Amino acid sequence: MRKNIVAGNWKMNNDLAETEMFLVDLKKQVFPEDVAVMVAPPFTSLHHTFNSLREHPVTIAAQNMHQSNEGAFTGEVSAKMLKSVGVSTVILGHSERRAFFNEDGSLLAEKVNTALENKMTLIFCIGEELADRKAENHFSLINRQLSEGLFHISEAAWENVIIAYEPVWAIGTGETASPEQAQEMHQYIRKLINENYNETIAKKVSILYGGSVKPDNAAEIFGQADVDGGLIGGASLKVASFMKIVNAF
Ligand code: PGA
Image 1: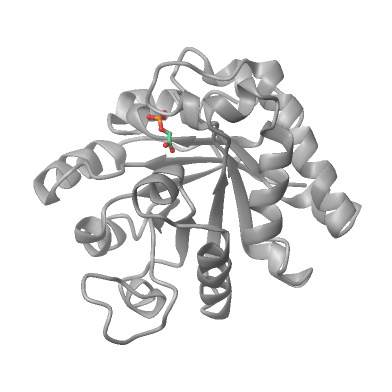
Image 2: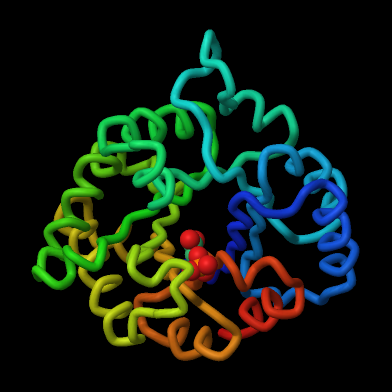
């Protein structure tokens, strides 16, 4: 069956000293066996985090990567570079990348291909803005984001794909989708995968919810039939709140 996953997306937080403080505390924790725990530090902390957590059941993810394998792309980081520091998982298409760095469907399709060619696991993020939901366009928008960025991959590639549904209006706002809204959309995403691929893949892919998940609402959200965990921003920055969420299944 599919995996329960809790992934902490640190965004542009935690320098090396702050990362080390977090890791010292994290390494004292006992991790439940049925939850895959992931942390996504900024690039500058990836190598240290990987080395520090070698003996611990925590996957290290990058928050982004470039679509090319190498070349004259000042300021960018490639899949090969990530792998060279022990990182084989990458978050792609986070709404902040889409909104502030103009990442669109065709660019994300390229990034997805590059990640898969480099044998990486990817967490593909999708989510509607408040205006889309108010206009009742949220289902068609999600369908479009998946069609443009992800639905070209092979059946076999789904082994290495995790989806994160993050309604933009719930990210960092303190406003979460209700458990019913999350379930409704996750069920719809699985239906789309079934239509575009097959039922086996639709049942097997982990779909995470993201957007103001906190220790006090995680259990209810994770308790929904089609929600397999969360992509956590703010509440992942402190080990205590992160672990409460890890233990919320
Ligand atoms: P948040 O962020 O938990 O702070 O709302 C979630 C995310 O952007 O992944």
